[in-house]
Image 1 (cartoon, rainbow over the protein chains, first blue to last red):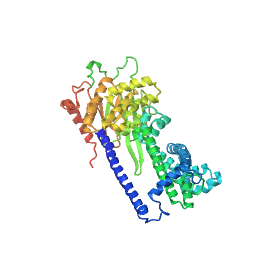
Image 2 (image 1 turned 120 degrees about the vertical axis):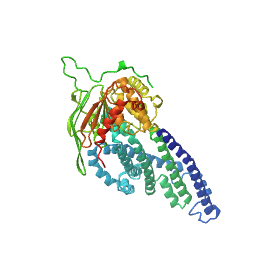
Image 3 (image 1 turned 90 degrees about the horizontal axis):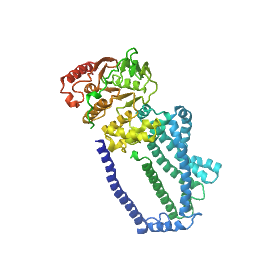
Image 4 (image 1 turned 60 degrees about the horizontal axis):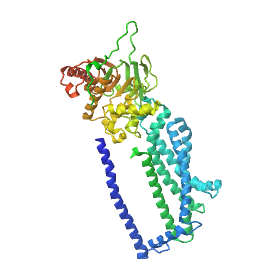
Length: 269
Length: 283
């Protein structure tokens, strides 16, 4: 009976997924149509403020090969992704173990939780001036801002995942002869990994958003920098190319993490 | 289904006392167990002075009204809950920390969700550091014993409740426990699945002669499976009566439906039900 229910619940999202694709495509198409109507169609909005789809596509093609602000589009995107990856990977590398220790070692939590709580209410951008003072206008500066934006989600979700593991699983492991380390490794961590992945997904998107913000303020390369250069040169098409590239890369990165979760945790579907 | 073992394979439940030696200690003995919990509304006495011995190869079932502390008693027997007073002895020695000598089957299955059926069953052998070839052989044996061959690579979330509990029983048996502790193992199953698993456990018992302490709220189940039925009082839980069920009763080895056609089965069931009923607090 439960098997049947599981099969049904698995097939239903598939059907919904099909519908959602249609609705998504329809709404995107409508947006495109509206955009065309208010720009090339009617010039209702001045080209200086909103480029037409054709202008934008052309600008995209140009920026893909021609440097603007020192780099072409790929160069800016690569710089952004590099800083983002550096900051997020550091946040995962430090945040997941810290989350596990917060949940598994109560004295450790008691000692460090107040510091963590205080720090996580400081917005990432408040660290930009300090990061500049410490590291100058380098990759490390932006990576630090990404790290600060991504770190709390890693810690909190992992801690939650570990502390919410059903006590009866821990009891079952103990009665089968597993010590604390074995129980943590074979039972608690695999179960908590699902929540840790949720944390990683949040960290990934928080980090991405904070990065673009930081790039607007500091640096000579990156998608945020491209946008600010577009604005400074009165090229609204460049600004939009940057914005759309940021959005597309964000979606791509998120689906990458989701794919990774399916591969690493096949049981958590 | 496996062939029924014939009567000559059955082993006597009580170990014979060797001439000149002291009587063997029971396989497990709970001595003077009491348990108090402190709650917001003050102290609750869950168990008061429980004494219970389980002999080697004996199947003891414990029934009592809900809330009488019978599950707490089992958790204490497993070493998972500390008693307020009293001792837990295995072969006459303090039992100490929980471990595979006293494996447990939980009401809510407690399977590791990230592991397949085979990996769940293998768990106790893996943590004991047993080599891969032997692990594989024993897992295959247990999968066959519990009728789980087709589900070897299924995750718990893909299994029905009955199949999950079969995996949990296999996981508890593979470590060859001295005593198997079962905490209302069929309480979360639907009636049909429960009946099938009751018969399955009865069959396993007749084949292999496990030592079992089995908690249930079903009088019928307690009589059907038990060599001895222990009746507990309402809270604070005490052991009220113990009733020995003949191992050679005519209905042993029959299906549970058929057992209820035997008058001796029904007599014992009625007698125990009256004892339990008198303990149920009227709301």
